[in-house]
Image (tube, rainbow, N blue to C red; front, side, top):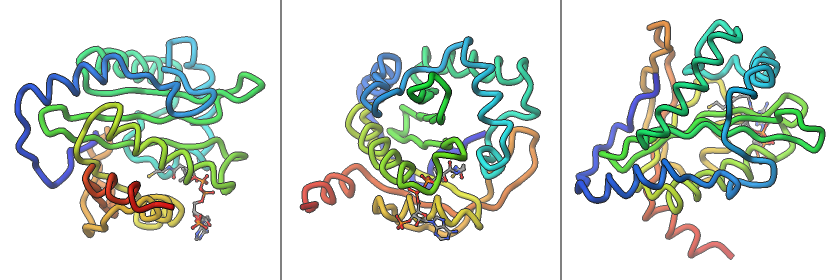
Length: 206
Ligand SMILES: CC(C)(COP(=O)(O)OP(=O)(O)OC[C@H]1O[C@@H](n2cnc3c(N)ncnc32)[C@H](O)[C@@H]1OP(=O)(O)O)[C@@H](O)C(=O)NCCC(=O)NCCS
């Protein structure tokens, strides 16, 4: 399961409550055209998407094996977590109605912190979609969900993710162990970015 960032912020109760409310009411359409919340009807599309190792192999926190029952529970659990203000599972849909990607936002309101995991369909990778989508997602997490800190992990050999993360200004903080849902450990590279750092960067951008 996703672990919260290493840095622990002091968070007043009212700030955590505002974040929980924002997560419950999250508008994922702001992430870009074709984005919407995942629903039970997306299970076949998610199975199709995740069954491609080019999509799912680098992602440690997905439930496995990819069966309708396992993915159905994952979607239902994400909906329940959103109702508690702790997660958002969004899918993106292309012009043909096929799922072209997913984004899972995990939020720790009492830490004012969040992370994102996700993937693009294989035919959409390596075209700059991930870099642009990730930057939009980071802005959305800071400004729409209202968290002050994002912590991210990527597999040591996931060069594309590292490029995307560092292009957005994240600060490398070494390595940490990520725990898969089956309890096994994957070594990850780890980064953090604060909202203040993000805003300073946005203000300085041309
Ligand atoms: C990771 C992912 C979201 C990135 O999105 P993407 O649209 O493929 O990536 P982009 O086209 O925006 O490219 C990202 C960067 O990686 C670079 N890159 C691509 N392949 C590379 C390679 N083999 N070696 C070095 N750099 C590479 C690109 O040049 C680009 O950097 P630049 O813009 O500075 O030139 C996407 O590849 C994906 O879904 N992968 C599978 C799942 C996954 O890894 N999810 C993330 C888990 S942390």
